[in-house]
Structures are given as C-alpha cells and as structure tokens.
Image (tube, rainbow, N blue to C red):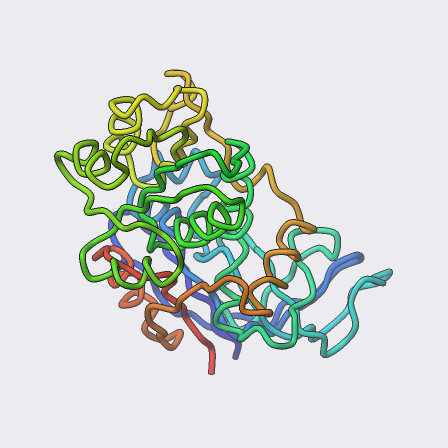
Length: 307
C-alpha cells in the first residue's frame, strides 16, 4: 500500500506518522506523480507545532505534511496535455508531498525537471526557489548595491544570495562559522549573526554602505539593516509576521511563477547555482528529518526520499 505522512494532533514532530492509504487517482486536468524526493520547509514545522499557525495556512486535521516534490508522472487525468507518462517533474503540493504518490493539477505549481538535476535537489526547489526569485526581485538589485542576506546558508537564503551575486551586487550573508568558507566559495561575504551584527558588517565593508536587505531569519536582520542606513522600503522580510506594517516589504514565493522556477532549475542544472543537500532521510524517518531541520544550522535542504 502507498505510504503517506500525516499528523492528527498539533504539538510536535512526534505526531508525524507514516500511514498506508489507497493509491490516489488523478481527476480531469490532473496528474499522478510517483514521488522520489521531497524537501522539508520551515513552514511545515509551524503547521504541526501550533494550531493558530496551521489555521493561517489553511491546515486542518488530519493533515499531510511537506510542500515540494520531484518524481515521475504515473497517470494522466482526462484532458491532460502538458505532461507525458514517465516524464520527470518537480513542483509543490501543499501539505501532501511526503508520500509515495501525489496528485496535482497540470496547470498548477509543477514543471518538467531538467535531466541533469538530481531528484533530491529538484524535490527541494519549489518553495525556496520561488521565494528566492521573488525576494531578490522585490528589492531591484544593481551593481552599485550592497545587500545583507540573513540565513544565507539556508534553503531560501543560499539561492537568494547567489541570485544577488548574479545581479552584480556586493552580498553579505549571515551564517554560522561552519558555513563561512562555503559562502565565500559562492562569492558571498560571510558574517556571524547575533548581537552586534551591524558593527561586524561595518568592519567588513569599510566606507561602503549597505543599501538593501533580505531577511530570512527575523527581527535581528531588520534592526541591523536600519542601523546600517538601509531605507525600510528596500528591506524584504519573509521571517517577520506583519513586517509590511512597519514599512518593510513582505514579498514571498507567491510573487513568482512556473517560468521563474523553470529558469532557476535550469541554472541549477547548468551548475550556475548550487542548492546544497544537508541530509537525506527515508520516508519512515520523516519525524527525524524534521528534527534535523528544527535543530537549525542547516546548509541548504533536508530531504526525504521514498526509495
């Protein structure tokens, strides 16, 4: 029987269970995908931990878990023309992707997987890829800019920082010491996060000034950006609820589409960008995989695989 990871209570990852259920079938305009890999996202943790956060995301019990997936098209619903049987695809299926099979609309958040892209990377790309593209676009970077990117070794941050580098901007990325050499290899200037962040950034950039910021971590980034003289309208936060009320932008993945995701996937397939895989777990150890994500200091993505 096909496996499906779900939770029936809020509180912790301990409520995540692998259950067996009937194989789903695609309806008109839908495709059935045999999932090979599914990337984990912090939004999943918020959903299974707290009912309030889950409600804001439209989650009700019992609920599946996971957003992103990559796999092969197993069945075509009536009228499907975009995809073929056996085709490799990647995409997003909100709170349903950690499973052996997932059903998604052909005109939804799903695209063809570039051949060179591994399933682990492809299955991690949907949420962080769209979010990275949208956040970088929101602050309109140019060569004259210096941008502060927080959590620059994480899933969204590592892609956003690399896209910022490609824009010609000088990029400063916060990360733990263990990830500084990695960030330097990508053309990103690393800096330790924590108290005194603004002062450490000033030491790095001499007389230059920071002109924009991408917050993937929390209030600390926004505060440091303001101390460094960044105009609030050139701060985009995906980590602080209500940031827009204070004048910062709050642009996320919904502002990017399938064409953006496909372009990003091609850049990864061509080794123009990298999305590191921190760790890989079998589906039976999904709760343990979320434990790794909860522990923090993750480089790139944590992935669950079905085989």
